[in-house]
Length: 213
Image (cartoon, rainbow, N blue to C red):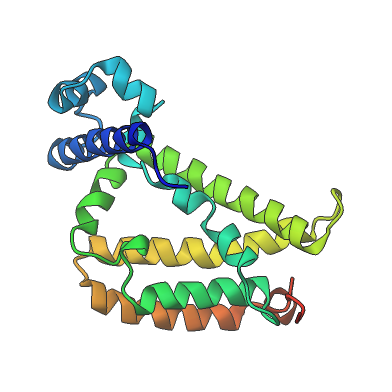
């Protein structure tokens, strides 16, 4: 369905507030900027900010929803004959090979990561997002395989598959913070992905294979 005028205006307002907030956080640091200052700079009320962003951390990590369900989307979209782990490996390789900004392979990402690194509140939120990713993936694997509620296999497999994604994201962040260029970091992380795949057992690599139609 086409986006209505009201929905578009709300989306644009939300994005504008987030952009203003991000600029302030990058300039002064997350802890040094108040929600009131964000509201003033965006020319809106504090209540308006909270209507769009329930917590201050949401202003900076406003695209976390796309991260939370990323692995589940990749697993659900796996190809015929492809396992959950191999689908995630393929998607990660494609993102890294294309130097995708979705994984942080972009100029300016080091500044973004520095804000997170310097903020205990943002580091805590990042950990919470990681837990959401893991739980969502476990739920998806349980659905896709028909696992019983007391079957620990989906949880164990989710941990292994999530390790791939978490390690790649962390490696990119570390290398970008150290001054790496996106194209150089991409090459390094592709090698890292090969090493990680070799460490996974055949049971993990062949779990939740989608049957041919």
